[in-house]
Length: 378
Ligand SMILES: [Zn+2]
Ligand SMILES: [Zn+2]
Image (tube, rainbow, N blue to C red; front, side):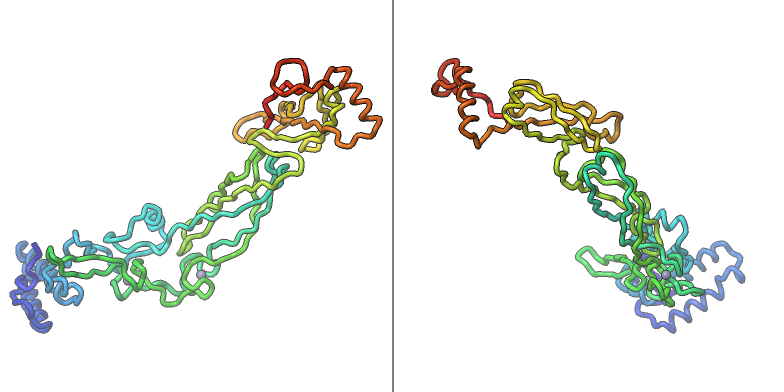
């Protein structure tokens, strides 16, 4: 039940400002603790003082006139908040910023807020993602204002208490509703809920406490990173409003396609093309690995198209473990397309020798080349 503040002062609703002042003065003369040592009088004096406050502040009086109680803490009046004493930039304010405190009925919110994270894409060659690198990246980001160090004020000036909300950071409004009077509290529009205004903004940042700047940051890319992975650089993101703690900078890796090798996690793949004769007779293939090392790939006689030869430990290093993946060498066999007369003759002789010159329908029985239906390789 709302207190009858008019009644406390012995007045009727709608009393004039002059009547309120007169009634208060009369009661205060009798009840003030300096003149009346009675503890009951002291309590009564406090009641009278509250009633006087409630009826002389136009916002509060409006609430009283609508049947509400401006000091009702459940309505978020914030009567107990320390007027004008709201500092900023302290650790408490920063913690508030992190934990969402200080907004909505809990006194003014801090001007200082944590900064946003930032994301930048870094394109790398396969050699760089596989073996690691250090790259300089240039980022456009918010940094602490050098002129005001985040305070947002012109040198030698200070923020002042917001006149709209008297530093409380919130304003109240009362609405009639079906259920009665509803007192609602919202952040003060003048000071954006901070309880303070900056009369002389910093000339460099215009009271933001931060400025945009381009800076170059070296990024260490560990060996084995993959396309789409993000590297986090703690505290290298945007500085927050009021010079609040910086967010993190995420560097997203994009891997450029390589001419020879493709990547599948820790494994690398490549394709080599062999003439049909080399596949049949066997050979050694020279191969330059991703790191430039020269190696020989052993091709056994009778190697089929689609055969995969694994070179153990020649893939990408494992990002969160030791060792390396493998290099998978896929063998493609090239069928000759342009045969001169002599080559054709030799091949026909070979076919005859191997009994591969008979034409048999596919899938019927045994023997001939054409009957051997294989699963196609991928
Ligand atoms: Zn305000
Ligand atoms: Zn500044």
